[in-house]
Picture (cartoon, rainbow, N blue to C red):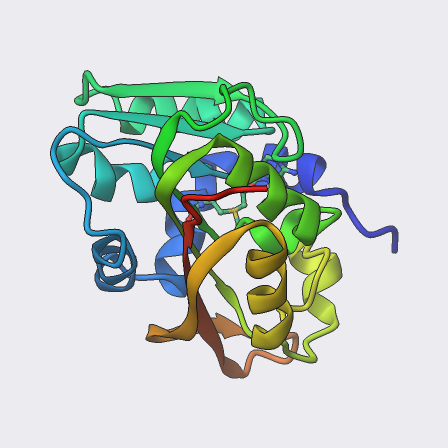
Length: 214
Ligand SMILES: C[S@@+](CC[C@H](N)C(=O)[O-])C[C@H]1O[C@@H](n2cnc3c(N)ncnc32)[C@H](O)[C@@H]1O
């Protein structure tokens, strides 16, 4: 069977994504990741691969402005509904390798389960570093390296998670400092191809844009 591209997969599951996601990633995990950025109420932040707006629901009450970016119009349509209660959220259709935001414009960037869909994770992180202000923070949560090949077909996963050393190296190469790649506050629980319950571990990667950025 042909492996679906990420665009096609998320177009198909957009209306069910909130239910699918709830099994994988809890609000407690999200809020623990957000806390790492030590946001202030005047912060301007972005959530990449925002999907239906799960991370933004945790961010918007605590900051001045949130950009939510995603390449899927179908996921953004659901996000628009989910986030209608907030007046400090702007949703933009965009690919992660060409963010429509100026250099040095953001206090923090987040991305939950976004990196493993990007064609070139190192380039995606470098593009994020471009839009962070000096001292701005990047917090990505994603799967540790795993061997669940079926997820490529079933969930359009391009990467089967990541080695933490690779993620650390990509952060450093992008000009981020104080890099820590740590365990997130829980596992990603999913059902395998034979109906078995799987708990895949999740990392949270933190870094700060250096004051002297190349
Ligand atoms: C696994 S979902 C996660 C959604 C959301 N962050 C959450 O926690 O529910 C991945 C999202 O990333 C988006 N995405 C994948 N590759 C992308 C890319 N290269 N640029 C922008 N968005 C992308 C998909 O459309 C999808 O909405």
